[in-house]
Length: 433
Image 1 (cartoon, rainbow, N blue to C red):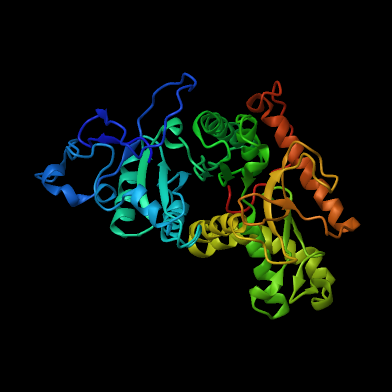
Image 2 (cartoon, rainbow, N blue to C red):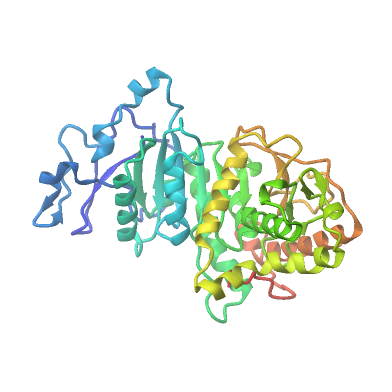
């Protein structure tokens, strides 16, 4: 269990509580950094007499157990449960932007066991900002009130050095949205600084084999920035989310072919999460047959299919008035499940990963979405049984060029010198602006 502190919502005082016997050992060699806020473990109402007086919560913790609060103190004995061997070792999952709409859908999937499995207890470490801290408390209260038997700890904070301590997974969702008139280069710089700081925090305090999934846009280059600032964590462990694009592509292929989407496999999104992304129909299959054998409409495949996938988010916003939070959360869950469960024989999945050593000839030292397979151990291998033609390769190279240009824009954040930003066009996806 991680560091817990009692938090008083009626004042600014944060009082640290002593670590319990079951707490994870804190690393002693941490870099000096500003102490923005301590991690707080949210309390529920089981100690109502101590916590609430005239409707105002107090900072007092139960005298017997000051390292945890509420239901997490009274129902969970880690050592006793371990002895039964019915539980796996507790997995620690950090989520940034935890008070946002995407997280509001995702956190309950994580807590329910849908993602990591019904025998996997989980601790959720929620990262927000000073402005969102009260909302984080509300999120944590909802999680407690949902009575998930696998959810053993909920903690919140605004300091990534506290929240990321010893985490096994870091789901980096929080990022600044693109405002009216904001150039893509400005967004790269603003959000890049966020992910540089988070990379440094992960490097300092996270598990040495932490898996990092970057969702905040522009996610490919943010993932590159993050991994460059975490040299002690394998670069292979960093992912940029392109699973929603893959899911959208599968849906469109299924609709066109008149089949249910469980018949569609081997769909790849190549490249950047932008309008240069390449939904690959050459390698995709429908019920084991190449898509081009089932869908004879080449013009649709080469033109309308790609445009539909790219613009899906924008159309959704027009229809509903909000971005695709729920389906994004589903795709995050899918991306994790693809790494913690074995890939079905012959199939693969899309994720943005570090290109160094890739077998396709794509430029090295960028984060690029490619087809991957996993044995279910959290790791992956790039698929090698991939077809390539001139049409596909030409579009892959365009997305590669864009990511190389983005990389130059953030050189000051990756330790590679001064930034030089010369992006030829605005390629932000509709719905990401």
